Image 1: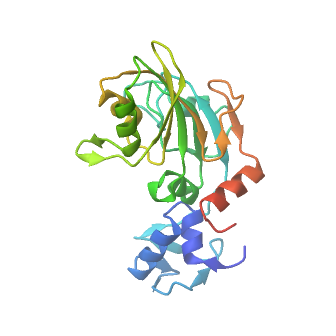
Image 2 (image 1 turned 180 degrees about the vertical axis):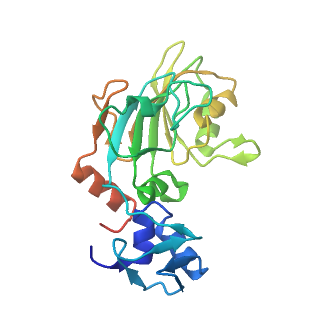
Image 3 (image 1 turned 180 degrees about the horizontal axis):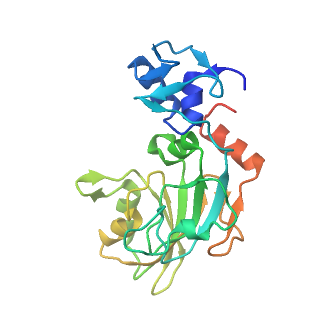
Length: 243
């Protein structure tokens, strides 16, 4: 394996984003073959060199895997659940790599979920600073007024902190209408809490798109590998260096 910059090695191993990895190096928390490294241009070979961060050995990353799943309802987006509920990991039949969910969908929500063992990719996707739009459709127990819709778009205060501006469009007018919601952040139960702020309850919630990637024809519980072109497009969208 050729030598690579330390921050790139740490990022690909899932230790931290490259920016955070640079900070770890500057703080003297990285050692190569027992020597503290503080120069950002330093290169190493993970197969040959002994690299540690805060005293813990950095292991060679697995083959990078990127998956798209249609998460079903009544399933938690965690690796394990202390309550013994089904998790998204139970659906990964035949996937040998140790992948982890990117962000989350709550227990009663469904739709598009990414899983990967690429820590840097996951951090970029979930960071609100990167403005990756997540698109949802929500069935609500009553229509918002035009004023409420505008307030929803501008952001609402949840637990004392205002949400980022959001996209909102009525897509099916009915007694229990459907809305399309677009977010660049992902607080826990955010959409449900935003509607609840206006006295409306979300009856169904499904994520249908992350950035450019659509849920498409994936059935609930079904998983597929992202195509190389899709991974490349995501990395360009996230302004990540190509591997």
